Length: 568
Image (cartoon, rainbow, N blue to C red; front, side, top):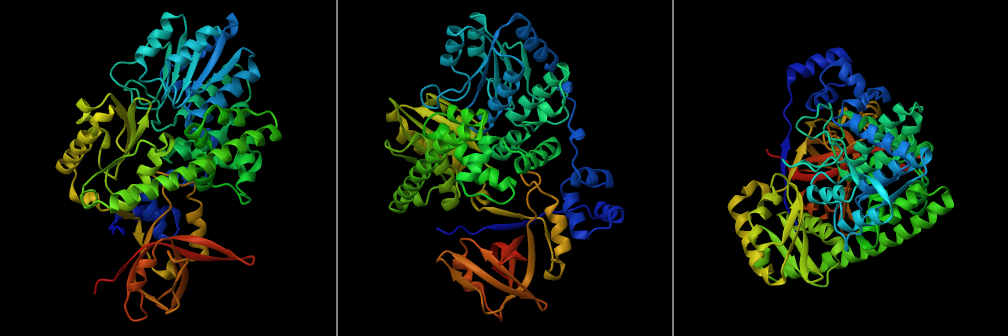
């Protein structure tokens, strides 16, 4: 099913663009893009293009940082056992690896714990607290989880176990009874940057501890490649402090990477310099696969391995888990599409809810995302989980899927999540009723425009603007991510040269010209758009600028995202 897309070009403040152009004297198009991203003065642009580690905020500005550091030092002085506890995804496992390694270098009574996805579920678990009690731990540092675990942390308190919570998820009104809560999203936290990931919050605690212990800053910066991996995988804002952390984390990945990252690069045949997209598409899926298919603890073991050979052994297990994940993901997606295509009622709905008891619980969220790529509507994929049915929801841009599920709560045993992703459990006999109710809620509340994917374009340019000097500055805008995406351009009244063609059945190899200037390009999955191409009929194209290397020669090419006939 081919879903047509809406195009929207961002607005820009022309006065601020002119002022920035006067200050920077770089291509006005780049000034437009910077102003759109809130970078509208010389100083902001300087900090953006030349990140510095001293741009990182003082960790003591975070609410409860003093209490957290004090409690860790109390544990040191009393010879207490400390348990580092984190979620089984990339953000959680990297955060645990950073904190565990830092503490272990400076204190010997420390261990880590990752809950099992299927036996314990997400976040703080009773099993984890009981493990701590049985093994004599009196302080737990939770990372990427804990902000909503009010009852469980109260339970731990009753057992004589203190908690320091390092989390970035939105707090509820009721906060857990922890000795310290580090979360910049707390209403009364004055920390200047609110968009840290869980690993980022843990890193701020490490920097504060290092300062208090009179250690060099490099002892904390040693973990920046893991912090960058978490930032990339958790898809948090790539602005402000996150951009500085990611920038220097990538530098470390390319000069002196963690043994686990190095081993995964080797197994993935990654030989070029690491960039954010490598972390997102190569490293993160393999780390996540451990928790999805088996046990997330393996990921931490890989990151904390003392030598490369040991890391490689763990990396091979993750690599294998990821192969199994891909097979499960692919077969489930094919089966799901076949179910929808065979049922006219399912095809014409405004939502998708599918249930098959044999589907793998570890990939239902990925399959939900794949189905959105095909049908572009709020989607829930359900499977059997013990006596119950469990599932994952994913949403389209602008639609709050968590709120839609909340309106079906009378049919559920439990649910949680946020705007674009959520999970739920229910009795098997409620599936059909839930499917109907969710469709009813979505149909009543979703604006029809939200069912058409939108391409947000930065600005219009001509082929004559695309030069090596122009692209060099664009490349300096990396690392890319939310709030700082790779610039997306539109060029109008472009003509085919007659040499564009379909390659590998699905893709288009372009050779296009505008005002006598020719560029090659690739459009993945755009084979059906060849009907628009003609030497005599102009088209408008949306694209990113890419660098192509062939036989040692580098040239600029266009990575085409969409194409439409030009309006006369």
